[in-house]
Length: 281
Image (cartoon, rainbow, N blue to C red; front, side, top):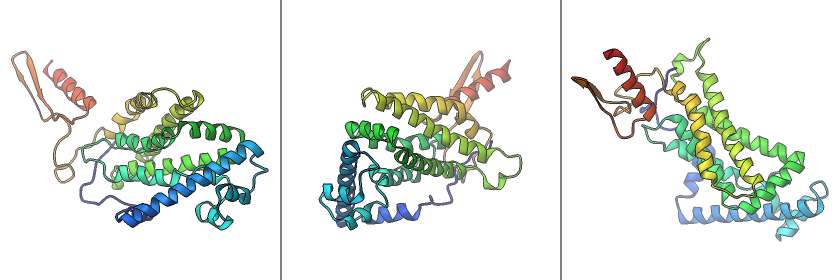
């Protein structure tokens, strides 16, 4: 498995992300974005209230707009359908997750970066536990809302799959090479681990240390897929300004001395030490 982090190519930014970034550089852009998100959340709150009291099928877009105190056309400036209205934050959260990937430090394992990226989704839910719990209840009861939720999850999986694939050598993508498969499976595993913890937290009424639970789930994913993604590839000096693995191993009599960077992944340090011990036997 060949992994590298290219230092010669700038991070790719989607048109959506670039637009969001440009618009928030000025105070006016920041204010407009905040107002947009505020209106989306108000429409979502109105939709959830009506879905809970009248039922999803009986609720109309006109009623949602009226409950939020806006015109029908205002609703459609923010959402394409009433089922979309119950998820007001996913577009902004996807942009924030992509920003995490774009500015990841060069030494960080790409799977760790993806895990940090999807934490933006958990932050979105944890910011309003009561709303998140009610939304979870509605999505369990209404198939159309469940389908919308699944579509949102797929967007994150595609983002993370593209990111992981970008850190494999594209010239080595040939028949029999498993890099594309591993990238897709690993991205799916990260999203699945996140959603498992999220559902458990929501079923518990939004109670508990969800961040600790998430870190535990990610450690399982990292143990399963991390060494495969990072193993077997030698980084060139141009690609990596400083080694992440142990820099020096030498023996003094019966003592093995290892010198490593403080940001070196622990599994790589241990693997290098084990290999050195075996060679001395």
